[in-house]
Length: 152
Image 1 (cartoon, rainbow, N blue to C red):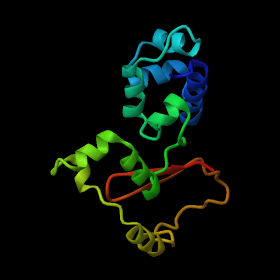
Image 2: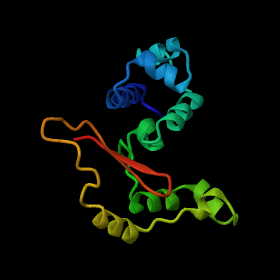
Image 3: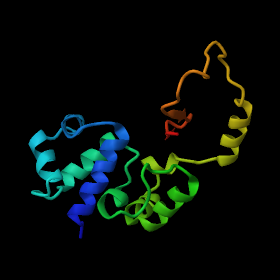
């Protein structure tokens, strides 16, 4: 059972992380602003559709974290977490037996990522000065279409 007060606190953490107010968040995920207001006030409970829209628009939000507080936010993309999710999810484990599916082509090669990180340790563009600027967020994009965002 989802504890509504805890869910609202986690939802507020998501709003704060992305720097959005309730209205902007509602617009972004495609729900009515009043639905968001009623949810944050504790009047209404989150629907499955509402939770799925959050996960669709904000991939860093983990399903188990937003619902019951287990896991991390933002979601980590390391191999251990993915393997844990695969072994504990009946949907993913049953899809692995189906042969050609979306998940069968995903391969994680941490050694290759480490080599690429070592190769690109020096900045390619040195025309900018970082001394006077404050870093807000660092985003790493991987060739497989995934990314990781770090905030100092």
